[in-house]
Image (cartoon, rainbow, N blue to C red):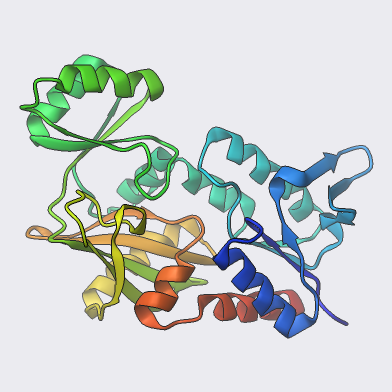
Length: 293
Protein backbone atom coordinates (compact mmCIF):
# COMPACT_ATOMS: atom_id res chain seq x y z
CA UNK A 1 0.00 0.00 0.00
CA UNK A 2 1.34 3.43 -0.96
CA UNK A 3 2.20 5.65 2.00
CA UNK A 4 0.76 9.14 1.92
CA UNK A 5 3.32 11.64 3.19
CA UNK A 6 2.52 15.36 3.23
CA UNK A 7 5.10 18.15 3.32
CA UNK A 8 4.20 21.17 5.44
CA UNK A 9 5.96 24.22 4.06
CA UNK A 10 5.79 27.09 1.60
CA UNK A 11 4.49 26.14 -1.85
CA UNK A 12 7.02 27.06 -4.54
CA UNK A 13 9.99 27.35 -2.17
CA UNK A 14 12.98 25.17 -3.07
CA UNK A 15 13.33 23.12 0.11
CA UNK A 16 9.60 22.45 0.39
CA UNK A 17 9.36 21.33 -3.23
CA UNK A 18 12.56 19.26 -2.95
CA UNK A 19 11.04 17.34 -0.05
CA UNK A 20 7.78 16.87 -1.93
CA UNK A 21 9.73 15.65 -4.98
CA UNK A 22 11.63 13.16 -2.84
CA UNK A 23 8.42 11.81 -1.29
CA UNK A 24 6.70 11.57 -4.67
CA UNK A 25 9.65 9.69 -6.17
CA UNK A 26 9.35 7.08 -3.42
CA UNK A 27 5.57 6.81 -3.01
CA UNK A 28 3.89 8.28 -6.08
CA UNK A 29 2.00 10.63 -3.75
CA UNK A 30 2.65 14.37 -3.54
CA UNK A 31 1.05 16.91 -1.23
CA UNK A 32 2.44 20.30 -0.21
CA UNK A 33 0.55 21.74 2.76
CA UNK A 34 0.24 25.47 3.43
CA UNK A 35 -0.79 25.80 7.07
CA UNK A 36 -2.59 29.06 6.31
CA UNK A 37 -5.14 26.92 4.44
CA UNK A 38 -5.65 24.27 7.13
CA UNK A 39 -8.91 24.12 9.12
CA UNK A 40 -9.49 22.14 12.30
CA UNK A 41 -13.04 20.97 13.06
CA UNK A 42 -12.91 19.47 16.54
CA UNK A 43 -16.50 18.26 16.41
CA UNK A 44 -15.88 16.35 13.18
CA UNK A 45 -12.38 15.38 14.25
CA UNK A 46 -10.89 16.59 10.95
CA UNK A 47 -7.89 18.72 9.98
CA UNK A 48 -8.61 19.70 6.40
CA UNK A 49 -6.34 21.07 3.67
CA UNK A 50 -7.69 21.43 0.12
CA UNK A 51 -10.26 18.70 0.69
CA UNK A 52 -7.81 16.27 2.29
CA UNK A 53 -8.03 15.28 5.95
CA UNK A 54 -4.49 15.42 7.32
CA UNK A 55 -5.60 13.10 10.14
CA UNK A 56 -5.85 10.35 7.51
CA UNK A 57 -2.26 10.78 6.28
CA UNK A 58 0.50 8.30 7.10
CA UNK A 59 3.01 11.01 7.92
CA UNK A 60 3.68 14.74 7.78
CA UNK A 61 7.11 16.34 7.33
CA UNK A 62 7.50 19.76 8.92
CA UNK A 63 9.68 21.88 6.65
CA UNK A 64 8.31 25.29 7.55
CA UNK A 65 5.33 26.15 9.73
CA UNK A 66 5.18 29.82 8.62
CA UNK A 67 7.23 32.31 6.61
CA UNK A 68 8.43 33.96 9.82
CA UNK A 69 8.72 32.84 13.43
CA UNK A 70 6.04 34.37 15.65
CA UNK A 71 3.76 33.40 18.52
CA UNK A 72 1.04 32.90 15.87
CA UNK A 73 3.11 30.09 14.36
CA UNK A 74 2.81 28.20 17.64
CA UNK A 75 -0.95 27.99 17.05
CA UNK A 76 -0.32 26.19 13.77
CA UNK A 77 1.79 23.64 15.60
CA UNK A 78 -1.04 23.10 18.07
CA UNK A 79 -3.27 22.09 15.15
CA UNK A 80 -0.78 19.39 14.21
CA UNK A 81 -1.00 17.93 17.69
CA UNK A 82 -4.57 16.91 16.80
CA UNK A 83 -3.29 14.89 13.85
CA UNK A 84 -0.66 13.31 16.10
CA UNK A 85 -3.33 12.34 18.64
CA UNK A 86 -5.13 10.54 15.83
CA UNK A 87 -2.06 8.48 15.03
CA UNK A 88 -0.33 10.55 12.31
CA UNK A 89 3.47 10.66 12.62
CA UNK A 90 4.86 14.20 12.35
CA UNK A 91 8.56 14.75 11.63
CA UNK A 92 9.65 16.55 13.82
CA UNK A 93 6.91 16.10 16.46
CA UNK A 94 4.93 19.29 17.03
CA UNK A 95 5.59 19.61 20.78
CA UNK A 96 9.34 19.30 20.22
CA UNK A 97 9.28 22.04 17.59
CA UNK A 98 7.23 24.28 19.90
CA UNK A 99 10.16 24.20 22.35
CA UNK A 100 12.43 25.63 19.64
CA UNK A 101 10.36 28.33 18.00
CA UNK A 102 10.93 30.68 20.94
CA UNK A 103 14.64 31.63 21.11
CA UNK A 104 14.46 31.88 24.90
CA UNK A 105 13.07 28.34 25.27
CA UNK A 106 15.88 27.02 23.08
CA UNK A 107 18.51 28.96 25.04
CA UNK A 108 17.26 27.78 28.43
CA UNK A 109 17.31 24.15 27.28
CA UNK A 110 20.85 24.49 25.92
CA UNK A 111 22.04 26.25 29.08
CA UNK A 112 20.46 23.61 31.32
CA UNK A 113 22.30 20.96 29.29
CA UNK A 114 25.64 22.69 29.94
CA UNK A 115 26.22 23.70 26.31
CA UNK A 116 28.73 26.58 25.87
CA UNK A 117 26.98 29.71 24.58
CA UNK A 118 27.81 33.41 24.27
CA UNK A 119 27.26 35.44 27.47
CA UNK A 120 23.54 36.24 27.43
CA UNK A 121 21.18 38.44 29.43
CA UNK A 122 17.38 38.31 29.24
CA UNK A 123 15.46 41.11 30.89
CA UNK A 124 12.43 43.38 30.62
CA UNK A 125 14.25 46.09 32.58
CA UNK A 126 15.83 48.85 30.48
CA UNK A 127 18.37 49.74 33.18
CA UNK A 128 19.58 46.15 33.31
CA UNK A 129 19.71 46.08 29.52
CA UNK A 130 22.02 49.12 29.57
CA UNK A 131 24.19 47.43 32.21
CA UNK A 132 24.45 44.27 30.10
CA UNK A 133 25.52 46.29 27.06
CA UNK A 134 28.19 48.02 29.16
CA UNK A 135 29.52 44.66 30.36
CA UNK A 136 29.58 43.14 26.90
CA UNK A 137 30.94 46.20 25.09
CA UNK A 138 29.17 45.11 21.93
CA UNK A 139 25.97 43.07 21.93
CA UNK A 140 23.28 41.73 19.64
CA UNK A 141 19.70 42.38 20.71
CA UNK A 142 17.62 39.49 19.36
CA UNK A 143 13.84 39.09 19.00
CA UNK A 144 12.56 35.91 20.65
CA UNK A 145 10.89 34.91 17.38
CA UNK A 146 13.05 35.37 14.27
CA UNK A 147 15.19 33.54 11.72
CA UNK A 148 18.21 34.49 9.59
CA UNK A 149 19.08 37.42 11.92
CA UNK A 150 15.90 39.30 11.00
CA UNK A 151 15.02 41.98 13.54
CA UNK A 152 18.36 41.71 15.32
CA UNK A 153 20.16 44.89 16.34
CA UNK A 154 23.92 45.19 16.92
CA UNK A 155 24.75 47.84 19.54
CA UNK A 156 28.02 49.24 20.85
CA UNK A 157 28.08 50.60 24.39
CA UNK A 158 29.90 53.74 23.19
CA UNK A 159 27.27 54.66 20.60
CA UNK A 160 25.63 57.96 21.59
CA UNK A 161 22.24 56.70 20.44
CA UNK A 162 22.48 53.39 22.32
CA UNK A 163 19.80 54.39 24.88
CA UNK A 164 17.40 55.36 22.09
CA UNK A 165 18.08 52.12 20.21
CA UNK A 166 17.50 50.04 23.33
CA UNK A 167 14.22 51.89 23.91
CA UNK A 168 13.18 51.26 20.31
CA UNK A 169 14.04 47.57 20.58
CA UNK A 170 12.17 47.33 23.89
CA UNK A 171 9.03 48.83 22.33
CA UNK A 172 8.87 45.94 19.87
CA UNK A 173 10.35 43.28 22.17
CA UNK A 174 9.20 43.62 25.80
CA UNK A 175 11.41 40.69 26.86
CA UNK A 176 14.88 41.71 25.68
CA UNK A 177 17.33 38.96 24.69
CA UNK A 178 20.85 40.42 24.76
CA UNK A 179 23.87 38.40 23.66
CA UNK A 180 27.51 39.46 23.66
CA UNK A 181 28.75 39.80 20.09
CA UNK A 182 31.05 36.90 19.25
CA UNK A 183 34.06 37.18 16.96
CA UNK A 184 33.07 34.78 14.19
CA UNK A 185 36.33 35.23 12.25
CA UNK A 186 34.23 35.59 9.10
CA UNK A 187 32.39 32.28 9.32
CA UNK A 188 30.26 29.99 11.43
CA UNK A 189 29.06 26.40 11.06
CA UNK A 190 25.85 24.48 10.49
CA UNK A 191 26.08 20.91 11.81
CA UNK A 192 23.39 18.63 10.43
CA UNK A 193 21.73 15.72 12.27
CA UNK A 194 19.13 13.19 11.15
CA UNK A 195 17.25 11.43 13.95
CA UNK A 196 20.13 12.29 16.28
CA UNK A 197 22.84 10.90 13.97
CA UNK A 198 25.54 13.18 12.57
CA UNK A 199 25.25 13.82 8.80
CA UNK A 200 27.60 16.65 7.77
CA UNK A 201 28.85 20.16 8.55
CA UNK A 202 28.88 23.20 6.31
CA UNK A 203 30.29 26.68 6.83
CA UNK A 204 28.57 30.02 6.24
CA UNK A 205 31.31 32.39 5.08
CA UNK A 206 30.87 36.16 5.25
CA UNK A 207 31.21 37.87 1.86
CA UNK A 208 30.35 41.38 3.01
CA UNK A 209 31.01 43.71 5.93
CA UNK A 210 27.88 42.45 7.69
CA UNK A 211 28.28 41.51 11.38
CA UNK A 212 26.55 38.17 10.74
CA UNK A 213 27.23 35.36 8.28
CA UNK A 214 23.68 34.43 7.32
CA UNK A 215 22.87 33.78 3.66
CA UNK A 216 20.21 36.48 4.09
CA UNK A 217 23.08 38.93 4.76
CA UNK A 218 25.18 37.78 1.81
CA UNK A 219 27.04 34.82 3.31
CA UNK A 220 28.01 31.83 1.17
CA UNK A 221 28.04 28.11 1.92
CA UNK A 222 31.31 26.21 1.95
CA UNK A 223 32.42 22.68 2.95
CA UNK A 224 33.86 22.09 6.42
CA UNK A 225 35.35 19.05 8.15
CA UNK A 226 34.87 19.22 11.94
CA UNK A 227 36.89 17.49 14.62
CA UNK A 228 35.42 14.59 16.59
CA UNK A 229 35.20 16.92 19.62
CA UNK A 230 33.17 19.46 17.65
CA UNK A 231 30.78 16.76 16.42
CA UNK A 232 30.37 15.59 20.01
CA UNK A 233 29.41 19.15 21.02
CA UNK A 234 26.82 19.35 18.25
CA UNK A 235 25.47 15.96 19.26
CA UNK A 236 25.04 17.08 22.87
CA UNK A 237 23.40 20.35 21.80
CA UNK A 238 20.70 18.74 19.66
CA UNK A 239 20.04 15.74 21.91
CA UNK A 240 17.60 17.40 24.38
CA UNK A 241 15.22 18.38 21.57
CA UNK A 242 14.71 14.98 19.92
CA UNK A 243 14.16 16.30 16.40
CA UNK A 244 13.88 14.26 13.21
CA UNK A 245 16.12 16.67 11.28
CA UNK A 246 18.00 19.68 12.59
CA UNK A 247 21.02 21.94 12.25
CA UNK A 248 23.13 23.15 15.18
CA UNK A 249 24.62 26.63 14.70
CA UNK A 250 28.19 26.68 16.04
CA UNK A 251 30.87 29.39 16.06
CA UNK A 252 34.58 28.92 16.63
CA UNK A 253 36.01 31.61 18.91
CA UNK A 254 39.36 32.23 20.57
CA UNK A 255 37.82 30.87 23.80
CA UNK A 256 36.57 27.70 22.12
CA UNK A 257 33.41 26.69 20.22
CA UNK A 258 30.03 28.10 21.21
CA UNK A 259 26.51 27.17 20.18
CA UNK A 260 24.04 29.84 19.10
CA UNK A 261 20.93 27.74 18.58
CA UNK A 262 19.39 24.51 17.34
CA UNK A 263 17.19 24.87 14.26
CA UNK A 264 13.56 23.76 14.37
CA UNK A 265 13.59 22.74 10.70
CA UNK A 266 17.20 22.22 9.60
CA UNK A 267 19.34 23.56 6.74
CA UNK A 268 18.51 21.64 3.56
CA UNK A 269 20.15 24.20 1.26
CA UNK A 270 23.30 24.42 3.38
CA UNK A 271 23.68 20.64 3.44
CA UNK A 272 23.41 20.47 -0.35
CA UNK A 273 25.42 23.56 -1.33
CA UNK A 274 28.01 23.31 1.43
CA UNK A 275 28.45 19.55 1.73
CA UNK A 276 26.86 18.00 -1.37
CA UNK A 277 24.34 16.12 0.80
CA UNK A 278 20.77 15.67 -0.48
CA UNK A 279 19.05 16.11 2.87
CA UNK A 280 15.58 15.94 1.30
CA UNK A 281 16.31 12.39 0.10
CA UNK A 282 17.71 11.38 3.49
CA UNK A 283 14.67 12.74 5.32
CA UNK A 284 12.21 11.12 2.90
CA UNK A 285 13.93 7.74 3.33
CA UNK A 286 13.92 8.12 7.12
CA UNK A 287 10.24 9.07 7.24
CA UNK A 288 9.22 6.12 5.04
CA UNK A 289 11.17 3.71 7.21
CA UNK A 290 9.46 5.07 10.32
CA UNK A 291 5.88 5.01 8.99
CA UNK A 292 6.41 1.54 7.48
CA UNK A 293 7.81 -0.03 10.66
